[in-house]
Image 1 (tube, rainbow, N blue to C red):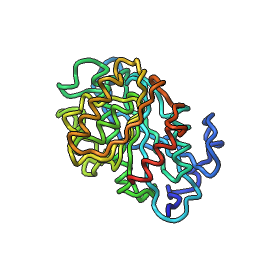
Image 2: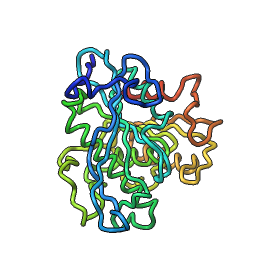
Image 3: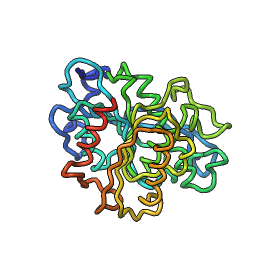
Image 4: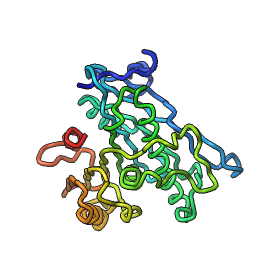
Length: 295
């Protein structure tokens, strides 16, 4: 059985209608905004020195789940590493579907290119590449936070998944399919802030990728990686996320290392195929089936 999490006081678990968010969640869900999960370096005003910036996520939980700890899903939005938001309506609708089935959903923001985050030499080629590295780091920071504070949120530290769509899928794959020490910080000259829970294991128990890409981290796949679900449209014309050969590379890596892969191909869909169905079943329902099985 799963139980409602405790986050300090009833005011923190405010109902959606009281929080000002225009999206209306289902009944028996509680929504908490602007929870700090860590810090990351960004370039200061007028291209000055790097400074630490707070990082936030929102939390959506069922209020009628009964006793027991909740499984958790960290959700990472898309936006090409230049924008996007944890308040995306598609992402909120997807979180609503998961939360109705008993999952605690953490919807995170991360540093983007306009904030000019730093990166180590191998990711310092341009602003987008640096921002991608920062997103990978921030996703692992969020996973560490959820596990370190699992008792506070009423979630099971051994049942945490990470989901991403588009650029967020890049980050989810990097966070889930690489070693715990990878993407630990922004580079050797940038120490990990104490609030980023350096000593906590960030690795999730499952990964879900919607129209993402793993080419940058394919050599990190290994037999210890968690189960992976991929949904991707054959007609994806985004140059960063082509079905061929991007998804083919993921399939080959999973086969090589014996990683449990659930691949849902979407023959008539392009990028951002939130409304796609597989044999009449929507992607949110397929995600719940996958998570119920592997978590």
